[in-house]
Length: 127
Image (cartoon, rainbow, N blue to C red):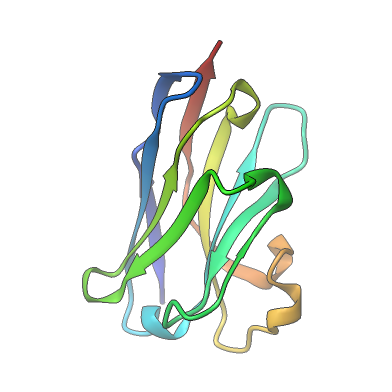
């Protein structure tokens, strides 16, 4: 079974960059789509980005606006989220999640499509 651990969050100023990492264990990692979601206090968990098992298909939320890049290194069992030009509204707990092997790609944006979740890493962006 895939297990996920996020890291790389922290406190930064607006305009700064962070790179989040999602380290995975499990023999089927390369066959699973991996997504990033975020959740701010009092708000619903929202989709940020997702990447297919081979990295050939990538989807981003509209709010990303070219600022974030998702990538993966299957040799290291790791997915990354490079975040540039951070804004205070990016403040949230960021989670990575993996789909099952029966993932239906039209629902890439839905948290319910992902059945393995990390514990999250806090990103705080000050003005």
